[in-house]
Length: 322
Image 1: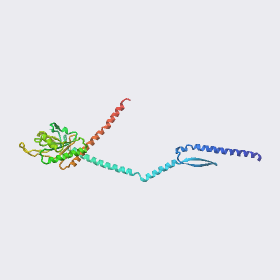
Image 2 (image 1 turned 60 degrees about the horizontal axis):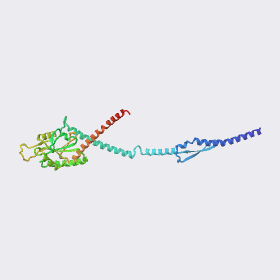
Image 3 (image 1 turned 30 degrees about the horizontal axis):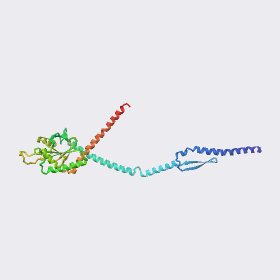
Image 4 (image 1 turned 120 degrees about the horizontal axis):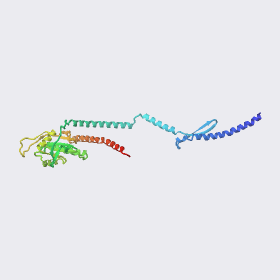
């Protein structure tokens, strides 16, 4: 019986020895094939590590990458650094300060603009302005000049007479300096119209006015007319003036009148009064504030109509057949 079992055991041993190498070879081939897709998520240049697998006495090796772990480690480091500085950085703090300062300046400027606009609105009466109105005079070329010729620009109107000994020359010197400063501030834009209206039409003929105003500034427009025409305009502008009665021809006399500059907006409405206490710099500052306010409102009004025109064009294009 023993002799019969010995050949059987030897056959089983040979079969097992031949099976183990083939099984080992198949295992080594199958393991890399199953893990062939693992390195696809990693870069070829990344270092790889090996790990030995042992199962039932069989050993095999496979490679794996730690790229994901490293990227995750860097991301966590960035998160920790960000959390250490809090939700705000110096850039956000600087942006916050600049925005806040800009808002303060904007609201301060807007508040001053609304105050000037409120004063200008208060100067208007019910139905017609308190200062300013229709008039008819003549310029130095003999052409008719009315209140409509003042519209479209900021007009700067002064009432006086050429025989004034001291006040009118001083105020006209100031007017000339204001004209130059406004022209410089507006970069030569034709938006400011200086006007001199005589309160003494009997002596201030167009020739006399032309020669007199050329001594101060060439941009000043001189206006004259009959006594009734001048009186009507002075009444419209609330200007006081008086001439002595029973004056003999050729006799010298003085005219008492109000000493103010009247600033009128492009619509012909009174907006500001400049007196003797104002310097050329302060007067220019007031004038430019009103001019800039008017420009800003015109710009806003222009841009407010652009979306409407664009939307209407888009509607027309969308309804046209393709």
